Image (cartoon, rainbow, N blue to C red):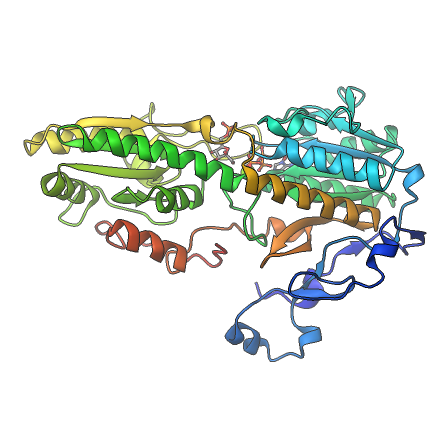
Length: 460
Ligand SMILES: Nc1ncnc2c1ncn2[C@@H]1O[C@H](COP(=O)(O)OP(=O)(O)OP(=O)(O)O)[C@@H](O)[C@H]1O
Ligand SMILES: O=P(O)(O)OC[C@H]1O[C@](O)(CO)[C@@H](O)[C@@H]1O
Ligand SMILES: [Mg+2]
């Protein structure tokens, strides 16, 4: 889909009439390489050729509204009740975002009240809507040093109208939804239901996912911390495999549809020979297949290290139809349950190497939740705080049906439906994957795997 300026405009609840606590500070600020002034916009595209394709005057080129404080705001802070919910899988930095929101709302805007809804969107159902946590600066003071979320999280669908009822009954004026693609979809439906009822409630999404699979954000928060942790496991199997006869080290990492964690952790550890990601199908057998390459590595240097994203090679499991390894159906949120490609590779590599007289020492690690349950690292901590500030400024200025995101290093407002309009994936023709190939020296493809669909947008 070609995006035009009108697709990128963010909805406003109405005219901003109240002075913002930042009015004075903003009076002299201008756009610079380090600041985007109120009213300025951030271009969607950043190459000369992409801009030239539109041949539009710069004011009409597709661009995002810059995030940040406004001199005038829509809501009277003294009357505002804010709500916060975290949904979907855990992600490093959730507590940092909660803390950042609460402190910005309370300390600077001095809003009346901040409510935390518990256990994801379940907390917005009729049954649970009264079981909230009063979020004060004191309550959140130390939460950022821990992983997880003090609010709890969940998967599973809720009725949008029931959620709106909860906001009305609890007097919520501005609602912050911290979630991944599912959370952003739910926030979009919630906003639509609010609009349909003509209510004056702002909904702002804060996109999170360790998988980095959301579009229109340079990287999602938590991703850096997660791949940094994943790096430790690659280093561990590399050491183990190198010290073992015919050592085979395999690390299976999270990444349902996108191989960003596997790719970045591989680059950081810089010790893997092969990386397998969902975006690039691979064949096991044949002269150019994965098994032949594994054998070559073991013969040439005595061991091999493989990094595997959990969503890679799912077609191979389908072919085999093994119930214990195949995914079955979907989870409560409708996400496809994946088959265990790690177990399949372990089994097939062991059988192949044994058959050619290289019986392997298998070192297999599936760190699973260990990469996402940790606290945010220093980079993500800063990032989460700044996203939280941007989210509060957006809501108080009456922006709604929008997410806050970092785009080409600037903080921007992205219309919520866009956040789920496509999936961010590693582009096999992009420079990230080229760096992976340069680092591992693996072939661009293993064997004659099924043709892959061309990835349309890889942002990293
Ligand atoms: N299409 C949808 N419509 C309404 N609600 C949805 C939809 N998709 C997901 N949700 C709700 O959003 C919440 C979070 O979704 P999900 O469990 O998919 O996690 P997520 O936000 O995508 O996070 P992550 O993928 O990073 O774990 C769930 O409560 C789910 O029911
Ligand atoms: O076991 P859960 O909570 O469903 O989460 C697993 C999924 O969550 C993620 O961490 C984020 O979507 C995926 O990488 C992973 O497949
Ligand atoms: Mg998701």
